[in-house]
Length: 105
Image (cartoon, rainbow, N blue to C red; front, side, top):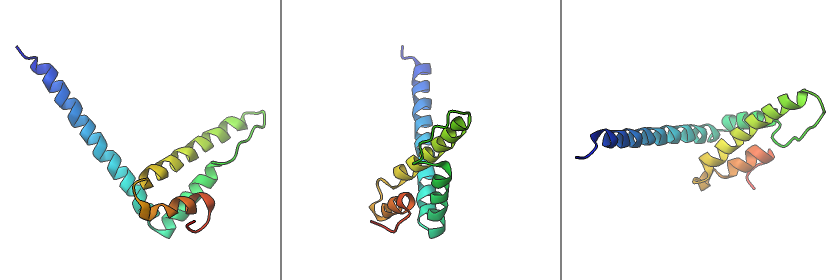
């Protein structure tokens, strides 16, 4: 006799994964929408700069932990941008603009 509970659980898991996938695509679409404007690109630059993405600092005190936390957030923002734009060549210049503070390279 088939285990209906297992089948239900598998269906629930698949539904959950489908819902997660849809939610993730919405999040990435939101990032693309924001970066499609000059204002959104400037804001992304400010987030990354404020977080000190490219700063590596060791002062030997507790400020290092705070700075590394800020940097970790900046790395997350950067990763979200890269992920959102990886399949959209029309917006890839935004990556250079955000990171290098330059126009498309």
